[in-house]
Length: 182
Length: 264
Image 1: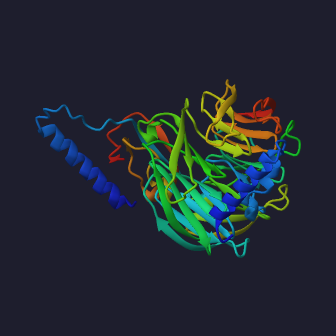
Image 2: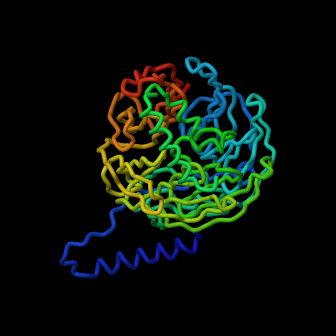
């Protein structure tokens, strides 16, 4: 979906509202219910591809999980991946955090972990989970997923590419600035 | 790998034969080792909410209305092969043998990837609009349907779908749930995350008839991975692990082993 699509959707929606407003509406048809309003959260473009291997971090907004050979990979939504040494399930140990902006999913084959970094697919060598290394990056293989909030029947502030890459959406009070609709 | 269906049928037949011969103590571990999952022995286990799946030498990635695939011929440097447009609302992907099962807001899509890894559409199991991951074992798919804002109005339920005939998946059973999210299946065990309602364990000695064996509440469960007696669970409250008795599906005796709570 491009900005053009949103404009079309937005204009279409306004037209629909107008048409509905002008009809006598004898059957009691209702306007679409607006369930929320969202504002984009931006990240500077140069920060977006900055993948860092860090020490253990606090679990916050945990996402998906992946398990291989006594190690567990827990997603931190849109931020990265916690690596947990789970040799002793009574005492799991956080050993590292992979800071990967936009990360949602991982999969592992052999020594390699594949992860999404917004529009890119990044490959990391995890043969030694204590010493993870980035080995390759395939650019622009995924669509920019976050150009709209992942909900429907909502209003949102239309994205402005000049402000950077959208890294998330936050719920806000309804505002006239929210001219896009989904 | 010529015919996955043939494989699972043979396996099911073998399993049945073995069981009728009186080997009732055959553990789930044995079942798993004999399963057609062996072709991906070098990959890990994903939770059911995954949008990434590896089957053979391909990485499959789904987004809302597309499936992309990458060749892992050189595993250090995946290469983009192709993509295919799908109906929108695709949420999850589960690889099983040389088939892919996609959970979508309107149903479950089944693809075959035996042709050099290129996905070929087989069928669509249609249900009401709902959020729904899917897991598969033997000839059955377990599909959870959840009512959520992003999935409009729907019942909360578990659909058990026979995939005996992959071209014509059939609903064979249905159970009400509270707020089902991720789920996992392993041998005679089925575990389902119930969101704010915690976690439920079922035995599926009869695959189409899950029987509730244990429910644990008091935390939020989003997705899970069962692995040989250890159940790893993730949710809004953090990460929890339970042990379960791999030899007694009827009484799994889930016990909390450890947790890493949110904020720590």
